[in-house]
Image (cartoon, rainbow, N blue to C red):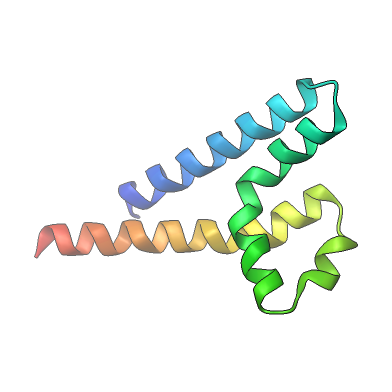
Length: 89
C-alpha cells in the first residue's frame, strides 16, 4: 500500500468535496456550475479534445464525477507508488 498514493488521492477527494460543498452554498447558477466543474475540468477538456463530449452533456454531475474522477484517482495512486519506488532506489 502506497502512503504517498493515498495522500495524493485524499488531497484530490478533499479538494473535490470542498468545491462541491462551496458550489451548493452559492445562490447563483453560474457560480455553482463553475465550482462543480473545477474538479473535473481537465478531464472534461480531454474528453472534448478526443471527440467524446457528446456523452458528457447527458450525464448528471454525480455520474460525471464517477466517470471522470475515478481514472484520476488511479493515476494519483500510481504516481504515489512510483514516487515511493523511486524514493527507495
